[in-house]
Image (cartoon, rainbow, N blue to C red; front, top):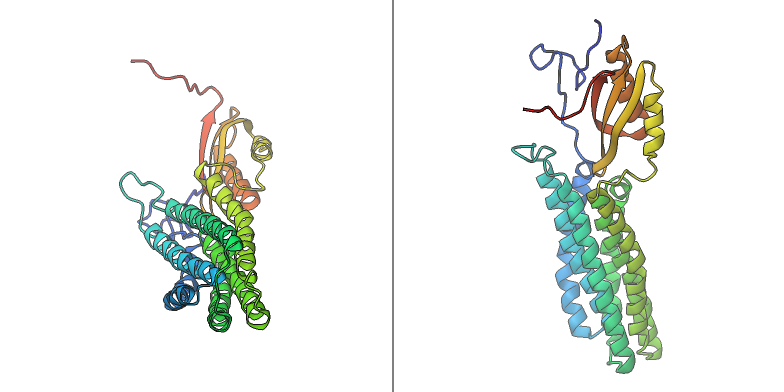
Length: 315
């Protein structure tokens, strides 16, 4: 009939049955795995130094920054592990593979950031009541090196954060740590030049308050995916109206649009066609609408004749 519903780019390339599967479609996070790995290596190399320096100098701001650096290492490691595991082919009952691990990594990163933020705020309150002696100059040196490390990691992750929720989680951790380093530097200069010890808990508290709203936004995005809510900006009712307006379509029902992981949108729908309608054309146009207007890369369309009954079959 002149219609080919192949799933890849070359019809018949898998043996002549007209259903080519084409190259595997990777997640958005997978495309940014290399810069993520470099950021992980750079951050991990410095994390040990900053943790030790934070304890040695007695600075809450530096300790909070060191804690952020530690969560950066863990978060970047989780992100990398999730991307690596997600590349495994679907097998057994994991029909979508393990792509959701990237979303789970983003949630874990968010929870880690929440924990660090609340700890720093708690310690800041304690230190306002009993400010300890803080070594300003060593604090300044260590935080300056930390800032350089964070800037490198930040630049590496910027592009990926716009496409992958998993990479965005790591990016937000590095961003908060980078700004934390700036705050620690400012606090160290104030302490070294004026002896004002309260600058340390003030900076620590500011870092904690900065992290909270950004972390909540990350968690909210990840939870939307886990709950299979339609992607932000996608109007499911509008999509249903567009599908229903295709020539030959009588009705559209059970339309679902959701995100598997960042950069991989899926949809399923039942499309009832009129008698004599060209179901090939209906299928082609429905897939085109979902792909071009709603970014759906994994559509599952069930085309049904108008007299089709969905009542359960009795035995």
